[in-house]
Length: 333
Image (cartoon, rainbow, N blue to C red):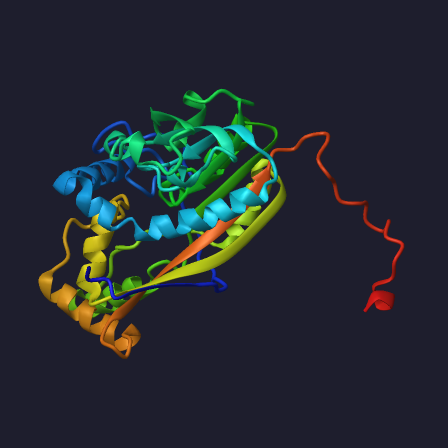
């Protein structure tokens, strides 16, 4: 294994804006609707190729980030003190999160992903708790209500899938509509500081070698955006927080190779199809000069935004009215 270290740490994130709001699906190549940022068709092909390259072994080798985040999400799911009849795993992939869900959490897991090949990459026999019933649905995450009835789900989870959604506000509304009253949504998505080292290195190298820059790392959201979007979608009892996963690589090229095998290559509409070799060499040198570790490796930051929201229900706890408190904080402090 060429990865030198995997060191998850907790940290606060810095802001970057999300700039994609559109609900029109991409049905085929070169089909781009208004306000599209991501080419969903190209993203599906990238995920398909990652799932089938060398029989899926390359994809399994690069599951380390998603597996780490899935383990952290299970801890949040266990904090919800109830057993569900069913949980919908939105953008499940081969089951990074579903693999960890046990029968004391739910009776059934429904896995939904836009890549059929990635969805069926691993057999059911490989799951941790085979007593949990599993159903796999091949469908577009952006059109959730086409395959899931409103008010039908007790819980919906999403582990590192929402950062490729064009209409994030619309999908959050669909998730809320699909939940039963007092249903819970728990999500994790890459935030704005993800791969900032790679982004800055490519931009500086491209500016110096080619006199301009083009996007090679996707635009992503931040915590303030997520809080506002969850509130606008109609969720209550919101919880949003941030942490980071840090991975060390021998060089920038191993990082880019792993991103390809993860199915996380660039899928921005209008992206360049290639990067000049001398620009890549310059970017690698910039990466090591600006961000390199003392042992010669280079770090890559994966910022994770966590979100929890509940669909409103009459029996939910509600905050007291403003001014109804009877204890002076000065007396307490």
